[in-house]
Amino acid sequence: MFDTGLPVGFPDLVGYRWSDNKIFFVEVKTKTGRLSPKQIIFHQHLMETNTIHGVARSTADALKIVEGGLVGYGYPV
Image (cartoon, rainbow, N blue to C red; front, side, top):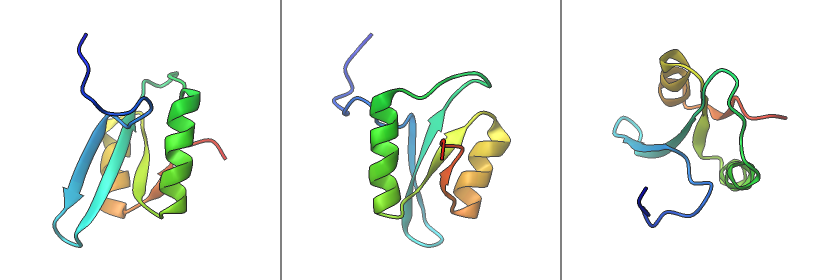
């Protein structure tokens, strides 16, 4: 293991959409994977800032989040 320097709860993937100059975050989980409390806190902050982000349980989910500009996809309500 190594320390990336990122805070606990930071999503697995981060990227930039050149088409509209927006950043996005994707948390990758298995079909049964659960979010940690720190991941939920990070999600809440991203909701407050209306940032593109979501939980991807498949490649299709990740593409849906990024291409669709979805905010909060796959997180518990």
